Amino acid sequence: MKAEPSYLSEHRLTPSREEAEAAVRTLLRWVGEDTDRPGLLGTPARVSRAYEEWFGGYGQDPAEILRTTFDETGGYDEVVLLRDVGFVSHCEHHLAPIVGRAHVAYLPDRRVVGISKLARVVEVFARRLQIQERMTAQVADAVQGVLEPRGVAVVIEAVHHCMTTRGVGKPGSLMVTSRLTGVFRDDFLLKREVLALIGRPGG
Image 1 (tube, rainbow, N blue to C red):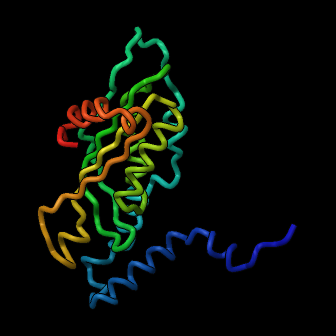
Image 2: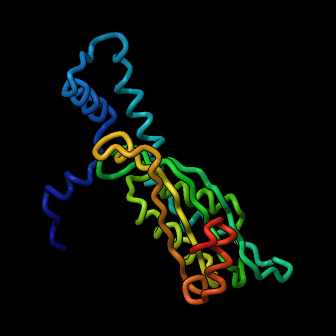
């Protein structure tokens, strides 16, 4: 088997906490700060711990979260919807916060999942560097792929701080994305029903 190039091996090595904290000090100095002043002495360590929390989704498998399902539904065959799942993600272009809420719906075929698992799937993808379009697709595809329902609908509404606090500077702007699969994509009446339940009756 051919050995991979050394630069690939190096690229995959995770930097140490000390290296991460040194990088924070470099950025602080770059913006003109004195990293030795009392108020900033603990900042690099706090930032590294915050990054572990903000980006903890890389170490989690959404498929595993959805693995445990239930088939004793009493014949229930209507829409299951979890609305207003709040999340904080970060834009991969500027590392600025994306603050929003997700609505996740599915039409069961044979199995349902504990409702908290849907919220956890949103959280797993939110705690990664993201663009909203990709996150919307990832949540929908994860639910569709594991539960195999008749259809999935995901709508995400979010404020992008890379746009509201810099650049064009438009506070209050809200971005909305959606992904529909299965019957929600193909059946107009079901699409209208699920979007009305989510609170976007106009589609």
